[in-house]
Image 1 (cartoon, helix red, strand yellow):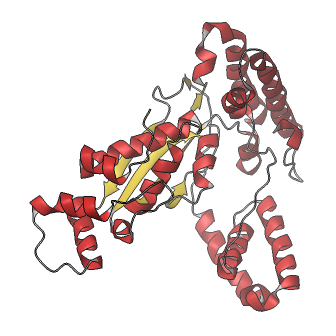
Image 2 (cartoon, one colour):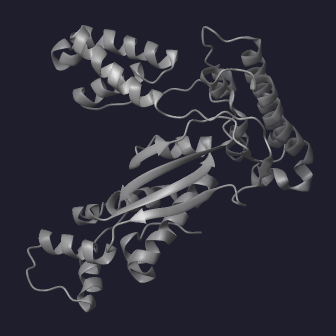
Image 3 (cartoon, helix red, strand yellow):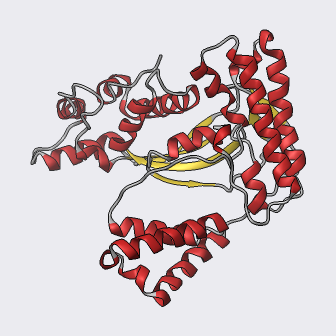
Length: 342
């Protein structure tokens, strides 16, 4: 990742460069220390929290013309020069290749009004200004928090009603028949790629989550639910991964911890539009996400697999526990049957 380079805004100054470069230097050094003892994939999972947000990466996407058009407008109104430049490049290419599919992009006045509207929504957000770094936490010890903040009023009844509608069941549904109805409706799945039926979309869960930024990106990039997050900055909390708390890794632990503070010391006086790029991905971010139960079951089954990163596995497992409280342990075990809780 470090070899990929990083984003340098036109107004980046020496504080910006020094903050980024110090993070990359420490990232490489900690990697070198740990690679003498541990497999590469395990080491990279541990040290990714040192990388700054400015680190370059590759991304591919596909979607309908309408969705891509909306993406361009969002990029153009995000408030960052990087976003505006990406929007204009995409707009130029699409109008050259398939102008008939993107009518709004062709009409300058209408396009600008859309950008202005979206930009006003962005400007109304409060930017958090950090002043200090106070706490450091190991993995899952007060650092990662998953809180269910709302759900459908009557999860079992709403789900049973949706199943009955889909199956044209008109007889009254009793409390005694709900479990058997749900069990029968969700049977037959042979692997996690066999999705649950659409009746599960009529039940919703909303979570407030706080975790490291790298884990947030892992979850966000899979288009999970309806998601909203707070502006990212040097918060008062960052994570030092569990592996570094071993006494045999004391040197790597000290470098990791000091690297976070060093990045902040360089970037402290930068304006937020620059400072956010320098924040190492081990710092925490808070976000809210809303799922229907069909979507939530898919995310849980995908993100609890043992090959995944420990942090998002923990989050997905906590979501599973929240569903258990609404459906019962037995029903949840049957409905989200391919979750890995180990």
